[in-house]
Amino acid sequence: MKRRDFINWVGLGWIASSLPVAIAACSSGTKSASTDWQTIGTSADLDKTGQLLAKNSPAGPVLVVGTSKSANLTAVNPTCTHAGCTVGWKADAKKFVCPCHGSEYSIDGKVQKGPATEALKTYAVKIENSSVEVKPS
Image 1 (spheres, one colour):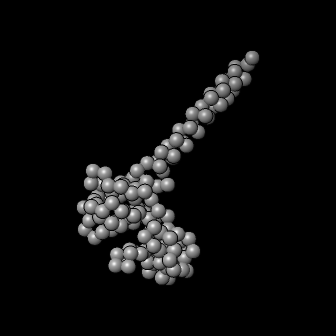
Image 2 (image 1 turned 90 degrees about the horizontal axis):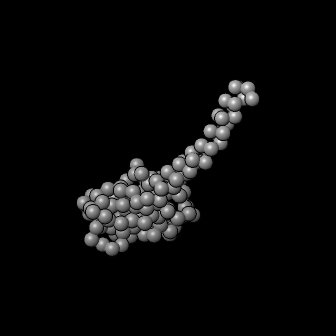
Image 3 (image 1 turned 30 degrees about the horizontal axis):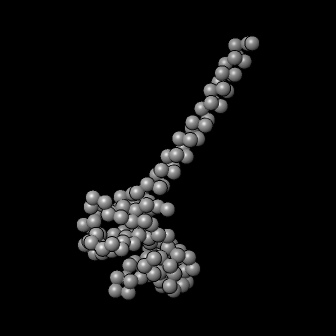
């Protein structure tokens, strides 16, 4: 066997044996980052107004409504499914409202009034050690 053929054979074997490791490392890192609980703010910030908007959280845009003392926290992606505007929480009416075209969503993110036809994405939410955390689904 010539030296060049030997080097090519060893190099090809190294690449072939390393490929499964590289694929596993890339996919496991992506999976854990998207399924872990992500901190988006503090319970003190949430309690000030009854809502917490985190536009650039690790989980993406998130709007949490409620207080740290209530058992019923709600977390949604506040991006309107109609035109991409950021919806606001109307506590008195208990609904999310889009300022652009008037779409309305219930507390669980379902469409109550169009023009939107798709529900808001929702997240699991909890308070852990004074941190508000969401878990992307």
